[in-house]
Image (cartoon, rainbow, N blue to C red):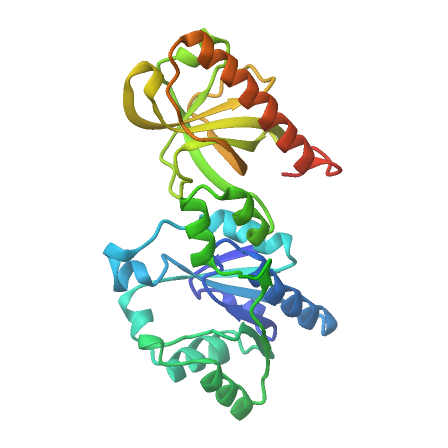
Length: 316
């Protein structure tokens, strides 16, 4: 898998098949497109190319309305590679790119720079300045140039349309299990481990405190998760929110890696959230809190092991 930022050097991937989109979350709707894309490319021994944008165009057009992303660009490219994409081209979103009309975007990038054999898109695809290009416009442009165009229908799971906005809503409300079903993989949060009060350690449940998380956070609660540490997946219980038992109102993200002890301060930690265990609550005594934490860990362990089985532990 190769990741190319900008259009410098993309000429070496000319003659492939491409899909254009934000691919935020690389969810099951995206995966349906990628299945068609990679099949097309492999059948002709050509590269499969995903073209995405950094940041999301809405960050420039409506910055106050920009939602936190589901995936970082790095993790997005990793997921695209997992689904068989050979090359991820990351276009820097700037006023010049956003000013391109649909025909100009098609001519400059699709035809001249990449000279693709065909495109694979979803039925709700829009491109160009002010979203002036839709799938009908794209079909006409492809027909004029003799390019193939595969239009992949939207995916529905459990009568729910799969989309990044729907998944964001589910995660923000804490319905992680439903979001994971639509994503096709856990929701990953990545942060740097910082030093905390070490209260968890004194209670017998040491935690890694995460800071600088850039992706969408679930609502306050306790969650089951997997932590990718040195290429091994370990079960974890994650507390997001304040600590009302100790009168603390500040929200924190505390990760207890089950059956692990070691110094991971200042390290970057990938936490794959799987399911919600319970809401944040206050306890009358520390002993009650400790008893609940043990129940939380037992529940989180069962959820994590169930998710991993029969997957090998080296694959998060």
